[in-house]
Length: 287
Ligand code: AMP
Image (tube, rainbow, N blue to C red):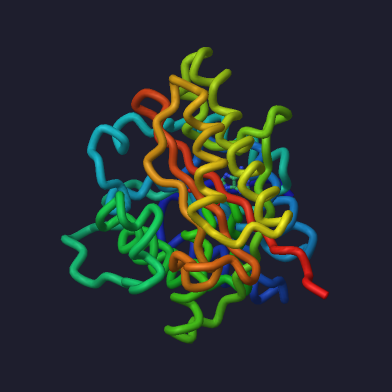
């Protein structure tokens, strides 16, 4: 089967209805394009079930808190279509803005609590934009399953919670973070890094690993774990840490003491490019 590209909601619905009539399940990977192996891993995972594989490519304006970030976000539709074709995608839904937002958006979906910390603290309105567009896309595609990357750990927790609390009939499948050989998490924004910034960026993952090692060794004080990690980040003058936090992976709230599995997450600036990454870590089992 070859790839089909559609730009309208009506056509997307028609193609999906046809696939359903043929008895296929609908597997859905939402993206903002500028596709890389991280997205590819979601597609590979989704394809395992042999359903009808839908990928959306839409740079969603309402989730950007800074106009320059939205304008500079990489857009590479031609290459993305080739990527999807090679990955066995059945349908790419790439709507223009007017198709998604034909009138001022007055209905929003907001997940509270989980959006107070980490990126939610520094990007006002970001998660409201994400959950609103994901809810719209779910309404359009009506997938059986939707695939999200653990790289955006807070986003994954927020989308999961939206689906649970609103009883949406879709299963959320989490996929592990795909990294470059030197540990840098793959991201569409990596292509904006200068060669020097690119060389500095793997310190982000090294810092997360240093923190995870402290947790695994039994350190319970988040402030101490954080200090060890920040020392790694501060050794790189081209990087500026926005946040580095240790939170509960479900509720995304800071923990006072590390007693069970935690999410260690950070946002780091390299020049005008903001990179995020995270890992999970577990304290040793005490006897
Ligand atoms: P984006 O296009 O950046 O909005 O990402 C679309 C989906 O791909 C989200 O669910 C991301 O979490 C996921 N994703 C992005 N980068 C990676 C990565 N390096 N590894 C795994 N998943 C990723």
